[in-house]
Image (cartoon, rainbow, N blue to C red; front, side):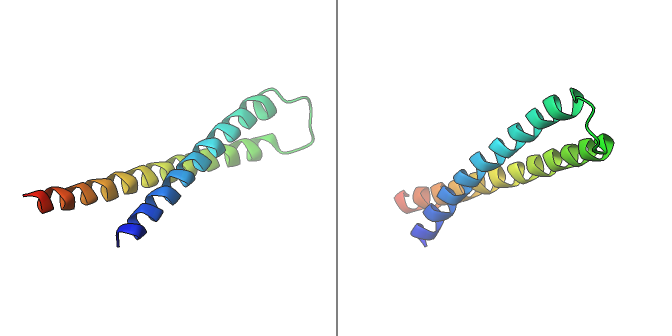
Length: 85
């Protein structure tokens, strides 16, 4: 059970960095490609809304991962504290 928690925390931390990268990438894309466009023939309003929605979903998923990591670490620490008492 201990190995499962460690692997889950490692995977969660990796996902945390991937989501942070995706958020930064989308915000940069929105800033430079949507707000400062050069007359492309793409429906900019739709693409802008899609990027905003994608950023919002990534932020919610990021919060979920952070809460999960905190929960697993605190539950593991509580078990270790109970063992010592």
